[in-house]
Amino acid sequence: MSQMKNEILNKSLLELGEWTWLRQPSDNDLQSDRLTMELDCLSKKKLCDYSNSDIYLAVSQEKGLRFTLPLAIRLIEDDILIECEFYEGDLLKAVLQVSPAYYQNNATDLIRVASVVSLTDNRRIMSEYDGNRDLRRLYEKWSDYQHSYWLRIITKDYAQPIDGVKKFIYHAVSDDISANVEFGDYIEYWKWPEQGELTVMLTTVIPFDILRNRIAQQWHPADRIGNSFVADCRTMEINHNQIDWICITLEV
Image (cartoon, rainbow, N blue to C red; front, side):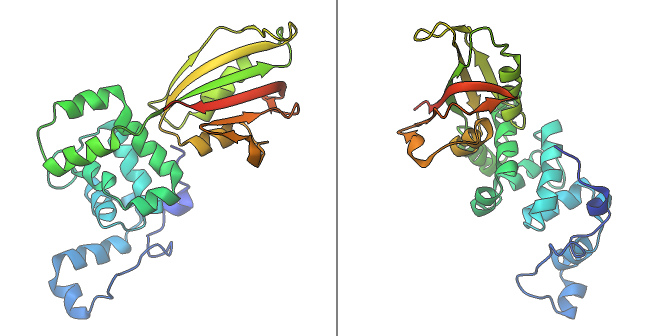
């Protein structure tokens, strides 16, 4: 995760304009209701001063998620079952039960959460977890988020170095720490001896359209055929190397 800028971390959610109340608390609420008092203090606290408990409270109450959820994700990346307030895995539960509407509009956070859930080591840890039932249910719901894609790339000539293509593919899934990339042999394209062909199998949580946009920027609306996207514009480049053709197919 790219680090938040200091000018953000040194501000509170209130200063960032990221704090709203469903109902503006009265003076009596601020003096007598414990949760309201804690939230009021949290709204004025600098992000850089947040404790793990503060992060849990902010995410569980869906406060300033644009700034607080990345802090939570960083914690569960280090320890998926970290205990912040009540029990082992409480922060993971708070992260997984964030409103779907938020994740629909914030693909970066969606990818990072889904990739943490999909890691082999975390799957093993969660398979042995016998704690909170709601957490186990939420985890199961998130654990099938990965998809497999076939990529077929035809390069301009068979002698063209493919290291740049490989680096580009790895970069396209670099924010998914659970991604798996398998390259097939680089072979002479059967149709034209001067061309080369490379096949790639990707397993990633990155949604189809996002992956497509990262790998190629010059698509046309008619290029979608079923579960595939195809480009044949003869002007495409990967790392400044021209390629003649690329196809991305979602395995179903």
